[in-house]
Image 1 (cartoon, rainbow, N blue to C red):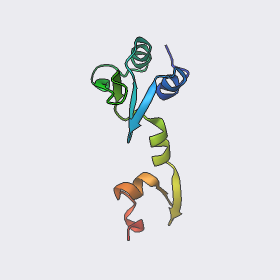
Image 2 (cartoon, rainbow, N blue to C red):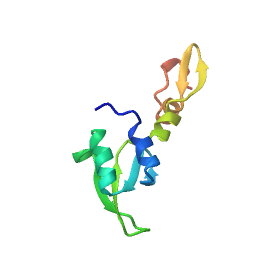
Image 3 (cartoon, one colour):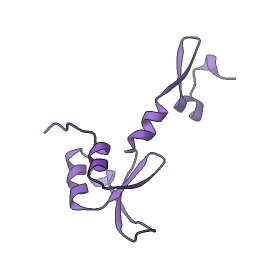
Image 4 (cartoon, rainbow, N blue to C red):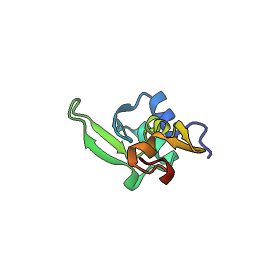
Amino acid sequence: MKCEKTFYQEMKEAGLVTGSHCSDLYTKATQDAKEIADRHGKAGVLRKTFINQVTGELNFDFPFALEPYWEEKNKVVMKINGFNLRARDIATDEAPACCRG
């Protein structure tokens, strides 16, 4: 079955998102969250559990699943000598050699 919406979109629309850290997405650990994760291939090692220290509820941690984080990292922030320089390049010092100071 092809997914019409992204994993993040489905979790957010279902009201299951509880927070994030860097690129990791935190959601409520419910049957709905499990079904969405399974449908998007995010089971097993791609889904860890933890106790939310604020609410005391069980949550899922999905590493690298926070789409807004990656959208921001992939924005072109400037062009130098014909190269698209993205925020992620500046943050990780992976800019093309011609663009480094």
